[in-house]
Length: 114
Length: 110
Image (cartoon, rainbow over all chains, first blue to last red; front, side, top):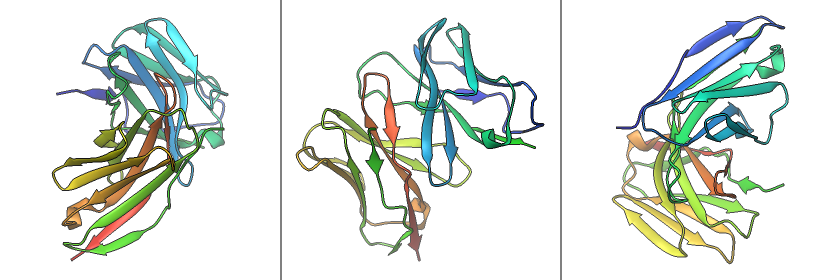
């Protein structure tokens, strides 16, 4: 059974803080993704990684960076958190097989920036 | 900008009825299409994928794809209150990237 875990379910931070969101998958998947989900805007891709130390910008990378030092772990970093980064953050992973392979999602981290 | 459009709903159907959820997309080159279900406060989970024109059935769920019209739909037969959730349509636009619609909220009432 595929498992994608995220470090926190709920997180409250202050404006200007550096925030780390961690994601771990246990399926030896090559591809990992970070999304944010906001009401009325749906899921939007922030960054993805197709291999260790490799990363690609998604649709909304501004204000975020990522790190993938090990295959199973993909971290999202908010260098200086702002209130407009209050959102639900979802991590996903996917194997490098067929294009119809699904993305498996973690439980999400609801981040509030005060 | 590649887009995926869904009616936000809510779509209300009585228990036992057929629920029909629709999605249109803008990228003609898209090849694979996914339907995810998301319960309130939970993460999305895959229900079905489809990549060929026509219908694909899996239990009570049928996905329908019409690439000429850039239209994909999900039918849920014999709807149950447990089907009440938000349904997300996702379109594969590159080998690694999905574009998601904003979702349709389905309510199945007893």
